[in-house]
Image (cartoon, rainbow over all chains, first blue to last red; front, side):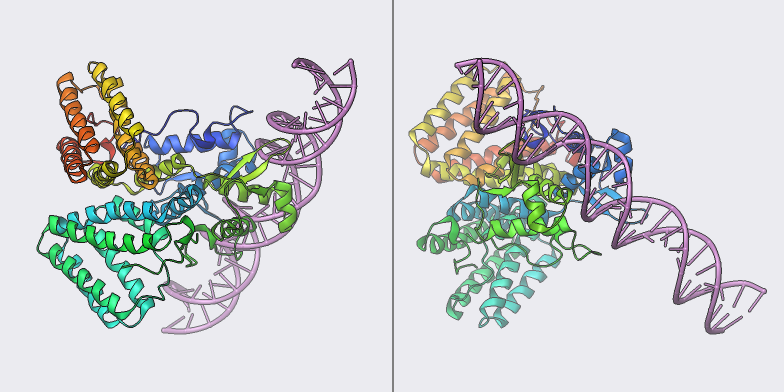
Length: 256
Length: 256
DNA sequence: AGGTAGTAAAGATATCATCTTTTAAAATCG
DNA sequence: CGATTTTAAAAGATGATATCTTTACTACCT
């Protein structure tokens, strides 16, 4: 497919002052162009440092600079040893999640903004899960509910299982774009520890999760969306009632 | 704030075989840790290649390797010349948009998946715009509607203005996370050219845009959400009726 | 206020060191 | 004696260093 990326010169580091562009930046641009024009696909060999240096008439360090950039962008995977070199990577959602987390941190968005975006993703996921969930998806949701029940007194395990339940709902939508975005947003918004979670709150959340799984099983997309909307709104309200400050993500005790 | 990133060693290139980790990878990890623990913030000086080389007891090329990676990740901005060196970048949504586009391309998602994710983002944006739009936001929407009306017979200009209208709705939500996601998804999904757009279709889309602006102005969040949902569903249906293939993004003539 | 020179910084090159992978030879077992 | 396994060496690849070149910024002089 042809991805229509921005052509304006201000598109990041591909347009630099001084030298029209550094030599390594030119190599990066060439490889990216080949990727987007489908001349390269995941698994293809991009080349060794020696190969690229020869091809572009530069030193190995320039080639290495370019490969380091491609690696950081998730485009290339590099291997040492005979038969090594750089190959086009397969898509890596976790890398993307990290990139988003970094950018959100740097731009200083508020918890409320992240949670509203998460609400958008999870509501759509719930609706589409009601349409597309498979028997395996239903089984997974039920297994996670049972494990959550068993961990009702263990706040750490419960928090982890809760996130896995939301992840399972998102994956039941069979929309990989929503899955990637869910992973990214929850990297930012999901606390890893939740010391103030009580068994009473856990039980209430578990009840909502059960109802959601039932609506998905009944193929009630509108109902699943509404319940998820209320559920994530409740989480957001608890967060925002505590301090709505960019640097209080970590301190927030609430999840679902 | 504390961003809770994955701590498992398999988190990308920060855990390498052979050498416990390359020297440059260690520098990258240190800088990232400093960023996430708030020891570094946007605008801060990370250091020159010489500084970092001295600090970590390595050569300038190792420091340069690390800085190249941080630059690619959008963490560092590098400047040549006296007073140059690397500083912590400000958040760059366009970089994130490109990263997402690359990853979506590499994972081979379908147009329908991207458009469903876009529908999630735009519906939430419409609802929040109804709550948060300012007089300046309303004025901008009306200006864009007027310019669209004047360009009804110019498919290229109309396509551009149409995207700007959607962007303006998203910005009227005052949620920067939704804005970043909108930019990212439309990098992938929005055709740059639309040769088959007819004035009749343009007029119909313009009517929907007018109604949407009116609902936002009336603060009717539920109505704005419903209209946007139907609108993006219509776009999706037209796309999917043509070929639902990952590599036909570029060829799709439809936008709104 | 403008031009120039000096200095600090990154860009790039040639080369050496180390690591990883592959292949071939030797040893062992049936 | 043939097949299989183990070990070692060679080849290929990246990691890293020292050094030269080019760029950009700042201070000084006219």
